[in-house]
Figure 1: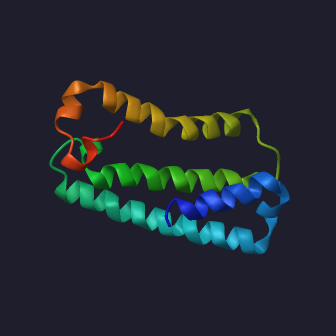
Figure 2: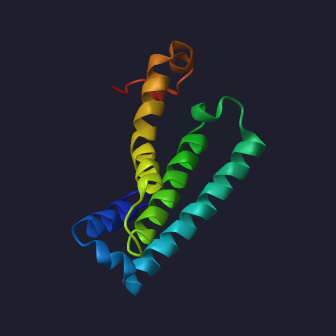
Figure 3: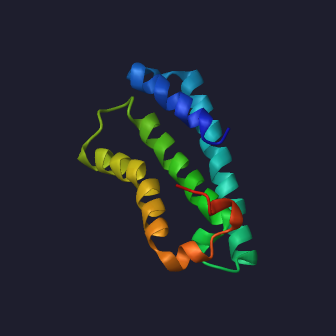
Length: 125
């Protein structure tokens, strides 16, 4: 749900950009962004209180980054109805799109980090 809702909202905006100015779309986007921000705060607190390894080794750390990406992405989508995407917004959108892949590649290529992966991550491509 945390990733499906923003994916659906983004898909709708990609087909019809002015819909980001619709009250229903804004409400769903805002509600989901607030839920993601609250979830990120809870995960951040959990990490500060209980983290035993590198933040990327903790499931909460990876989910925290995912929720932050969703929150920023929804903010970009929401503001796209008011004015066209400028260079800074496009750069942020590209960064947010590539960040998960770059982080995965970094972790996958780093043998030290890969050695301490949890068992459910060892079968990743």
